[in-house]
Length: 491
View 1: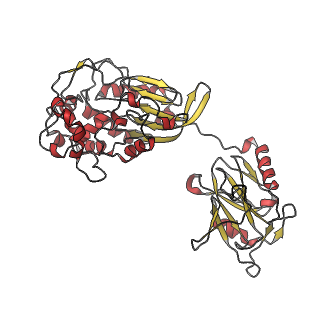
View 2 (view 1 turned 135 degrees about the horizontal axis):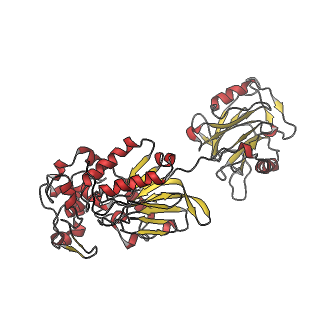
């Protein structure tokens, strides 16, 4: 008996060769089929299955006749052509009539079924002739993620399909299971804030702590805030820009933090508002803070986003009570960033001093990264989750879909993006994701915090004497930079 494994993909396309679409002797039905071995029986000896979820959408399985099994990469068209040589026969066990290619007896037609509907070549939709359940829905059509469709005479018993499902589950041989590849390592790196020596130390520690192949192919998500506070913003951006060349097998994601957004706004690298409105429209909500925060009023301020004006300004207060440290130039502590490019704080010359590749980097920063199938080790064992990485977090009480829209589209009409700059309002998991297996990982808060699947990874917080931290999934291992406070490495 021929057999083939169905390796967990979604069966969503069924191609039937032979038979007339308009004949009254056919019906279609489906049965939920999990990721199991499919043992072809004579009752289903002329079924061609395609797979929506398989890589490249190749043909997953085909059976034509009792002694013919097609390869997993053979196109559907080839499957139909190879079935042309079959002769008409009738299966005694199931009552399924199979019709050969004789054009005088019956005009052949190929039907492609998706979600319980048939589409003719001319685009006309036609509802399948099928038994219906109590809700009026065609029985078995489009039910569940996995569906097995068959063609039979109107009098065929649906119980045969159910027996097939039970047999497939019971008779799956272990040797047919596809080998599972080890999960890809995911590394999330906290705020860097201009400290190149800490970043270099952290990177070396990550490379030493992880197996060579895991590190070489890891997904590395930087959680934002690459500039300000520390002395070497320019060198930090050079380091990040070089990573794809140095580690071509890795994937690198660079999130936008609130400091990065403000830096980009000041040097003219911020994406424009989607509706074409001027950046000056973002001023009104916070205009009462203009004098106190000393917003930038130099050349070009008229077309600048409010956060760019705040970033390049000169704050009147010299002491930051929240950090217990003096401000460095502006409310964003932007003075070290200006100086790393050889420009005095608050000078409009910064836009000329920043290299174009740095401006492109700032322009291209994403506001959110969403990843599927991320494994994470929990007390009860490993689970597979979705992952959302966003600099500060997601607001708990605001509509989740609206937050995702703003982040995915990078809507720069918003004067202050709470998901990039909020505090307590973005600390917890939002209500829309409560109870779902979704990791939310952020930086921004100047703390390490792990609560279930909520991860805040910002141990450094821009402080000179604190390390930069990273977390590694699935193990949830924390890796830190280890250089002595205040030291720098010169190149």
